[in-house]
Image 1 (tube, rainbow, N blue to C red):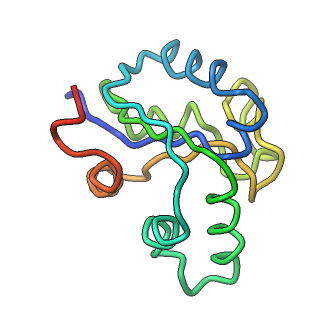
Image 2: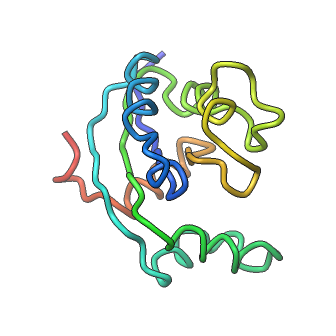
Length: 139
């Protein structure tokens, strides 16, 4: 198995709740190397672009509002099988269905405010990483 990169985000709810340090610790404990990290506050236009795949869904406006309400932490993570492993560490999108010990089970309050994001495939990871990072930004 080869080393791959995935995109990760700590969302505004977790940043506001002071959970960044504990989530970063969980990431490192799971064997990830953080090769890019930046705290930003997404504009409405950026959030609409990043979540464009959901544009026609009824939750789109609420998602954009949520994602622009405060700072987020965007990251490039690296390890073997990074996409699959980060999704495992995050847990199910709905924290009620997330396994014990996962990020979402520990920190998420609802399916809408689920504290973290991760790419769902290597191809998605490449697009999402490129949305926030240039090649020169990544170690």
